[in-house]
Image (cartoon, rainbow, N blue to C red):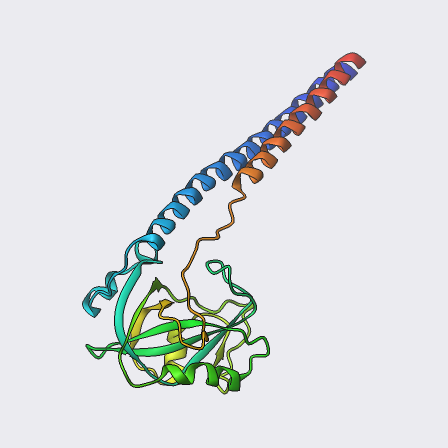
Length: 250
């Protein structure tokens, strides 16, 4: 086989590899654009739900039909009586609350007038040392035995991941919003399959600190798409430069 023939064969093989790389990179860029479109639709939908007027919390018979895709962040209003004991969830921050940072969230069971129990995230407690005494002082004034009119957002629980620290039942401390595990460990009984992120009322002391939610989802898909398309262009340019140099050599 002549040198020219070997070069053409090598160039053809390299060209196939380069075309496959370009196809993959362009595909990744298109995928990021599609994800960006989906993310924009998600943000628009969540923003609409967060801004909507609250509706009366549906009856328990309808709770099984709730789904995160359709009902997450819907504003609801209801009246309930806080129960004990509480649980606290330690977190480094919030993707829907820009006014909070490292600390804990105070979760309490609350009994509705129909006898059902829902879990309420009553708000943020700045408690970086995970101090159970501080948490007790924050939630004790909430448990009055009297019904309280509340407005909040429907949220759905999360399970602990493989890297999530283990909960401490002695401190009533969790690191994920696993209300099922809390209910079982703390004797809350059967609770609704969702919990409420409380918007109002705000306690007289301001602690725990409830508040309105806002969407802060990362939206870097355009930048990622540009990166993938740029890499595809770089591969094409590199191959073109190599191919031209090989032709000159012949």
